[in-house]
Image (cartoon, rainbow, N blue to C red; front, side, top):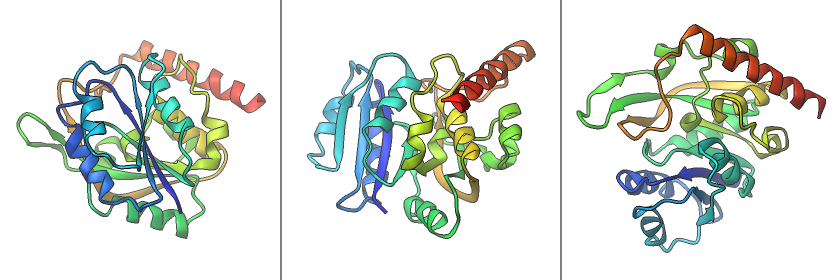
Length: 233
């Protein structure tokens, strides 16, 4: 199976090299790390270019925020299995092999694995298991109400791209959209192995806190409307 890693970057110089190093060591010669950069003004592009690795393919992002930056990266991927990657985590050395093993054994359209959540400043573990903290499990309606699809821990079959793209602008985040779309067309598999160290720091573009009830309801209504529109396409 050819692997594509879709990474969205924006001013990620602080942690980028550690992340890229943890990815490249797991990729084969025909695999690729597809980066969509959304106009970084720091050394992000210099760091990526310094690898001189043909597997790293850099594209200019649409400059419309993280959802569309990921959408752009996904659209450029040529692999059979597309992994999502943030710019600031650390992959365990067996992540790719473990996830591909699930795709080979199970009829999954999407695989999401567990992770350790840690604080970058102190190095302390915040949540030893994201799955346990979030109550993660498969189920379309379960994940519409309480999402447990976390992008940095996800991979999906490339055939799902025609349903995933374009990612709607008005939904909250891309990962919930991708997970639920995959469940609409097959099965989402939850792997209980912790395969990344998920870094939390002041520059994270995603939040882990819960929203107020009105915002939660609004987000779910918007998501349902977009899912209904996707069904008609």
